[in-house]
Image 1 (cartoon, rainbow, N blue to C red):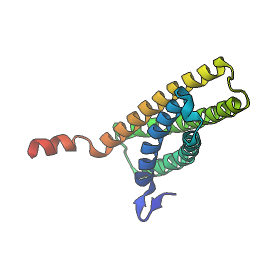
Image 2: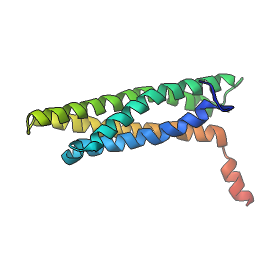
Image 3: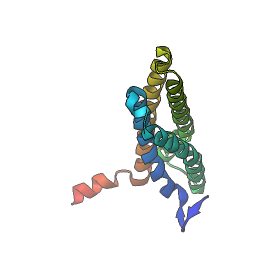
Image 4: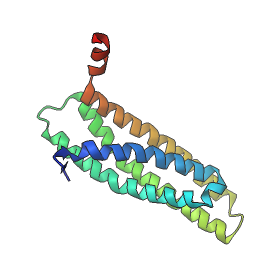
Length: 161
């Protein structure tokens, strides 16, 4: 998928990923640290969002690669954006793994009211680490992308206004 309604698909899809990654990360952290959140519909929403994020991320990356390949001589900032963007697949995979582990933990809690503390702690630590790392990385990717598109244009507009 290279274009949607005449626009580069990456430009449209990236907005979904930019919203879904931090939202999924925050929900995973909440579900990991707050047992009551795991017992409700929030856990299932988190799992669904992680799956959607996992599905959209490689499509967005591919659309970005298509757009990148149109450039004859990409700027260093655009190359940095492309390199960082390519890593988002690993973060999407990690978010999905954490969501599956949270779901497995919830199912274990239903069978035994007090599952192993080590499992709860390990999943919580993993959720926090993956969540924070994913939020930081999506920011880094987006920041490089914004700079590659806008450069110093905003600074120049402020000075001239």
